[in-house]
Structures are given as structure tokens and as C-alpha cells.
Image 1 (cartoon, rainbow, N blue to C red):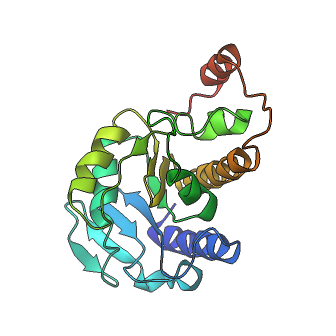
Image 2 (tube, rainbow, N blue to C red):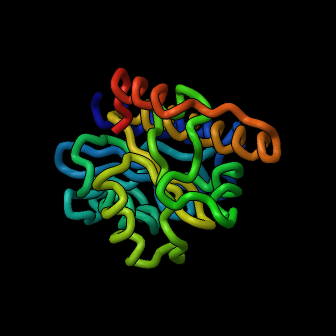
Length: 211
């Protein structure tokens, strides 16, 4: 896909995520890897009102080449891409249900959400929790780089989810699946719940490895 098409695709997905309430105000960011750099949503921008030409164009080292100043969480995207060369796009949101889960006490830090549905296992896989680090703190880059070495998704404590994909569409779809699963998890609290068992999860991982 050409760069212009990628910019327009970022605008389309940003608008869709915003209009459906998955991101609010100027929260969240999207990036797409390019052969010689990356595109990322600008800092303090509303996902529902992105303009293709204002999207930040960066070099491979993260220097701004064109567009507005990049998201202040650029360092997090760069760290993720360093660990996962197979992923070509990243979505980070402050989506309500996922953030709510990230604030719970006593959740499993190695795998926050249980295997409620097959599509969560297929699109997201295991979801580790990154301990709370203030937004913009450079140490968040190290934490993301370490987690991304073995997982394509992460939940930042008291902050929100991050997930990558083989292209922008797949990253967005995976994020939507994560958010829906967080919603289901909270709706099912206190109710007898049948999760997928270990054999069922292994079979899904064999057929549809999420990474």
C-alpha cells in the first residue's frame, strides 16, 4: 500500500474508533511502519479529526521529516518495532473497558484476560500487564521493548492497551477484539463462567498463531 493510502487508512480507522467511543479527546495513537521510517498520529490530536497531510512522517531513527509533531508516546512505538520486526502497525488506546481491567487489583500480570472466546485467543493471544509507569516516562520504552519480545499485545496498568498487527487493519481488529473481551470479562464478574480449556487454547494456537 502506498504512503498516501496508508495516511488515508489511518484517518479512516481513527475516525471509526473515535465515533464508536473507543478513544476520547486527544487520547490514543496509531502508527504504521514504512520501509524507511514510520507514520504516527500527531501529539494532542483527536483521532476523530485526523488530516492525512498532518500525520507525522518520521525517519527510521525517529526524526520528524514532515507533518505535525509526533505523539509524545512515539518512543513506545519505536521500542515495540525494535522488538517485533514482523509487526507493521501499532494501535494504543485509552479504551474504557480495557483501562478498567488495567486498574483491577489481583489480576494475573502474566496474562490479564482469560480465554473467554476463540477470537480473543486468535487475535490477541496472551496479554501481559506492564506495571504502572507515568505516560511519557522513557522507562516505559524499556518495559514495552521487553514485553514485545514475546507478546504482540500488552496492557499498561492504569493507562491502556497496546497491540500490533501485520498491517493496520489487523492491528485495529485485534484492538477491537481486546476491548470486547475486557468488556465481557467485567460483565461476567461474579458469575459462573466457562472459559476455553487448555486443550482448546492449544488447538487455536496451533491453527491460528497470534504471535
